[in-house]
Amino acid sequence: MTQDPRLLGRRALLGAASATAALAVTTARAQDAEPEEPAAQPAQGARPGEYLITGAHLLTMDDKLGEIANGAVHVRDGAIVAVGADIQAPGAERIEARGAVVMPGFVDTHWHLWATLARGLGSKGGFDKAMAALAQKFQPQDNVLGVRLSMAEAVHAGITTVCNYAHNIGSPEAARAEWQAMRESGIRGRFYHGHPSDLPKDKLMDLPGLEALAKENKGDGLVSLGVAARGPDRSLAEIWRREWAAARDLDLPISTHVAYSKAVANSGAIKAMADGSFLGPDVQLIHLTQASDDDLRRVADGGSPVGLCPWTEMQVGFGLPPVARIQKQGLPVGLGVDNLALAGNADAFAMMKLTADLAAAVAGEQGTLTERQVLEWATIGGARSIGMEEQIGSLTPGKRADLIMVRMDAVNTAPASRPDITLVRAAQPANVSLVMIEGRIHKRGGRLIGHDTGKLLRDAGAAFSRLQKEAGI
Ligand SMILES: [Zn+2]
Image 1 (cartoon, rainbow, N blue to C red):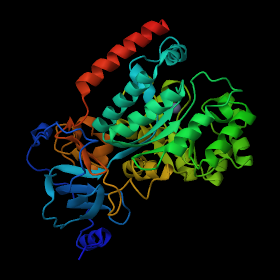
Image 2 (image 1 turned 90 degrees about the horizontal axis):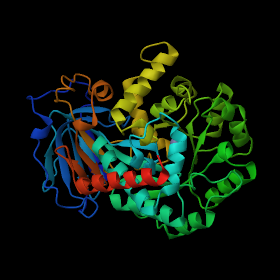
Image 3 (image 1 turned 180 degrees about the horizontal axis):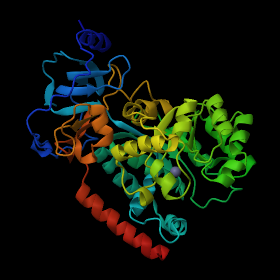
Image 4 (image 1 turned 90 degrees about the vertical axis):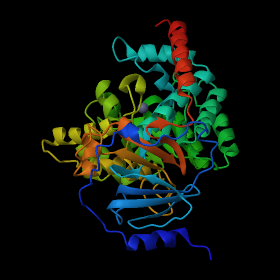
């Protein structure tokens, strides 16, 4: 008799204590003392295994399951089979997780992967000009290196879903190259097909190229397709409306930057979108730093989710991310690292801490956005904001097995009496010891698996040097 995995999961849950007990920190076990996985098999080529992760403090991010002290997760065929306190899985490989939190991987909802290749460019002395000059020199192989470097860092940081807002697509080949590189990474994500970085306001993006990619896409793989549209901010009304219509004809979700400056906010872009039924759960709005309360209400009424990128929004002077106002409107929110040429790295923990602190600073009251709430934005909330909450974002039986293990017994995380607070306040990417995506292990014992980082870093360094030379910066 075959067991229904969902039933198995429910049964295991019946015995699970919904625990809020303090995480028992075991011996002073250094994070690098965990048994090391041989780094031979490429992650994307390996079959998803069957695993039983035991002894973990589970932060499930599932409302019904809550936190489970000394819990276990059973993973098989790329899915979460069971979550609970007492689970048997004979034949599964056991992964010991004492002294660690196991939780869903982070969902990053806005990231220009190509720009990671220009990490360290900084914001001094005309960043926009330098970035525009660099962008024009990109060849498809440079786009690929940007994607690969970003994906490797995502794994390092515990980010298991990456939304690539690809706005340096100089040719159909560049679009295919980024799409293909994402699919080969074995990391879950969405490729928001964009346009050349310098596309004039009165020119359409490559809609035939988009359509061709959409038609070829069988929906098999871990990467889905979307459209990075310029919207009313960066294109003429007739242009962005046609691009919107094309995306909706192809049934593709849309992402767009909006209201990131006073001039843009005052131009009535959000009102135009609301009036023309261009908002909706399929339209993700990025930044909104200068949006008025009226505009935020329009966004809420229209049902559009929001992507906040607190680092870059402050760094480039878009203004303070309106964290508390957005929270008040109850908008679906995801967080994004945005552009690492500016932001530096993809530290999802630091991003959560900054977001929570911004909420308090702007509202003038500590605890405005609790650690638990910001953890939700970084996981299940992010998944909801991109329409993927049925597949990812929580440790729920039946969902895909995207999870991470974060050590709570390192010198920068112990003692961890409230793991949710420790995760936001103290943890760092280096504390992420295990990363699993679709049941495949991408990081174990703190080391990346299946990413040839030596070659990748050499190639990325050489490409950035060449690009700087060609761009004259
Ligand atoms: Zn952006």
